[in-house]
Length: 518
Image (cartoon, rainbow, N blue to C red; front, side, top):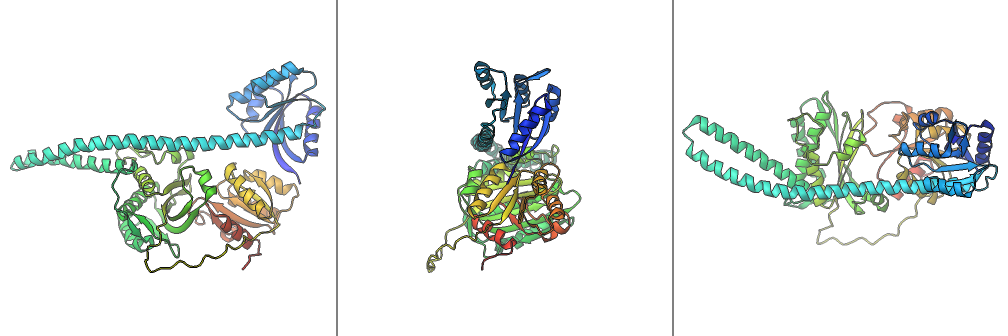
């Protein structure tokens, strides 16, 4: 079994490059490669994605130090290995100090494969650490903004209190003067609008008093949906997908209504030509694997309330900032940028979690995870605990495709632990290369949102043309995706939504493979 690898070779001699490729293949790797021997050619090649760079030390128009500088100037964290037949130990040490990851002699490649495997592991570890650090910085930034915003809101409320009190007095004294009464009323309305803004700021800062009570969301949603339908107008269709046996949650019901109204207005603005708004509830268990990818989350049972639109969607950099107070992409005067930040604060103050998943041209899903309320029925007796049933296992071969490397790794570990043989890829072309290599796969488990211009749907259709008997299981963090296109893959293949527990993954995979255990 060979493993695909993308190798950029910096070498002026084609026969030396071929020797290197032969060694990679002997070591069980299946290289996709390009060979360059000038700085401009290397800069052009680096516009593509590579796993490792292997460079000759010296060439007529280029050398390894210059190649390493090109990689560093591009801001890429790529394993950089140097091979040479002439350079001594001192130069090798200097190259390592400059940022090269290993140095070895040409023709003596016994360390090549172990070095590549080591550097790929370390590069993946560095990428994961950067991702976690970025999430922690974002959480810390939101926390700092919350503290600052809360202080400003409290001070601003004091100022508004003075204004409103004095305007009330003025209204009594100018009541007989139409012009002065109108002017004073305008001042009062503006002050009250400011008070509403501070109310939202306090919600973001998690300093808004909440009247929490045990709530069954499914019972409350029909009335809220009726209000939303009147608010949004005829161009927006509202659908509900209510989970069976929904747990209770302990929240402020008025904040739930405000949250849904704010989300619905944002969704309407993203669908100027009309569309569909889907409101969904479900019981969700966020486990340690999910919490590892989202450091601010406490593992446990949650009631999920999600809203999905079929609007324009947001690029990743916009979605990342969407919960910041006063951040908005709307025109001046069209919005305050406080809707999502208020919902974020409400979720955090309630002990929950807010997530945004968006794809440009497809739409946006906002999920609100609210903690499950403990059972409060005094007469209820706990059912005897049943021994956990063993997870269904198997030995088939699975091709796992997801561009999120951290999630792909943890899913691969789950599947391997269940007995499956798993190969993985980060995009559609890499996955098809594995299929075209002649390797057999029983199941394609693919995310829907993939890079390189090929969606999970596209990948499934290409894969099934090559392997008609291949079974497919889709996964996504988006909401109701099947309305975004049709075709054999879209209409027939099952779908598992992120985040999923290990037992859900195990059961779904077995069911798709046609060996579900009853």
